[in-house]
Length: 249
Ligand code: N1C
Image 1 (spheres, rainbow, N blue to C red):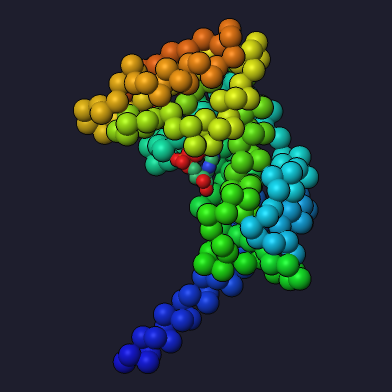
Image 2 (cartoon, protein in one colour; image 1 turned 30 degrees about the vertical axis):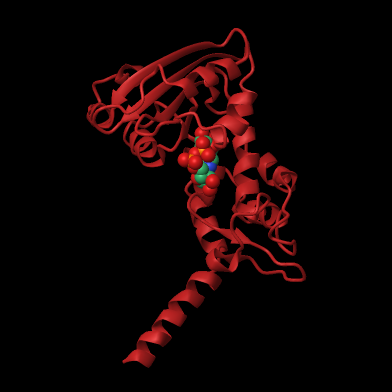
C-alpha cells in the first residue's frame, strides 16, 4: 500500500510539473475572438524559454504584450489588491460593467498558472520545477509587465477594489502601488475611486493612513474618492441586474 501510494504521489507530482502549459493557454485564448493563438503562444514562449528562470527581464514580454491591446474599453478598468476573489466574482456576475486584467485575454490566459524555462532547454516547465521568490522570475516579470500595460491603457474614471480587512490596504509592495498607480496620468485619467471592501465590520476605514499615501501618489488633477462597502453588499448588488454599474457603491 505504501509503495502504491508513493508511486501515485510521484506520478501526480510529475504530471503537475510536466503537464504542458500550451493546451491550457491555447484553449483559454480561443475563448476570445480574433487572436492568432498559436502565434500568441510563440511570442509568449520566447520571453522565458531557454533562459535562467531567475533573471527574466520584464521587457522580455514586450512582444507578447504587443500582440494584444487593452484599448477596447479603457474607460471602465478595475484595479485591485488583496481582493482577488471578491473582485472577480463581481466582474464575472456583473458583466460589461468593469474590466479587470483577468477579464482581458492576456490576464485570462495566464491567471493562476506558473511557468518557467531553463538554460539550454526548449521546454516550458511548471509549478514546483520553477524557482519562486526571485524578483525577476518568469511569472512575476510577466505580471509586472502586463500590469504596467494595463495601467497605461486606463483613462477616464478608474476604480480599485482594496481590502478593508487588513491594516494596510494600499501596500507599497503591491503591484497596484509599485506599478499601476504610478502610471495613471492626468488628464487621461480623471478620477480614481477606491472601493474598500470588508467582510463584516471594517478594520480599516477610508481614513486609513495608507490611503493617505495613495492620494499623495496620484498625479495632481486626478480626483480621489473612497467608499466603504461590505462584501455582502457587493454580492447582493452583483446578483441584482436592476442595479446600474456604478450604483453598487
Ligand atoms: O500585487 P497586487 O495584488 O496589488 O496586484 C494586483 C494588481 C491588479 O490591479 C492587477 O491589474 O496588479 C494586477 N495583477 C493581476 O492582474 C494579477 N493576476 C494574478 C497583479 N498580479 C496578479 N496575479 C498574481 O497575484 C501575481 O502572481 C501576483 O504576484 C499576485 C498579486 O496579488 P495581490 O498581492 O493581491
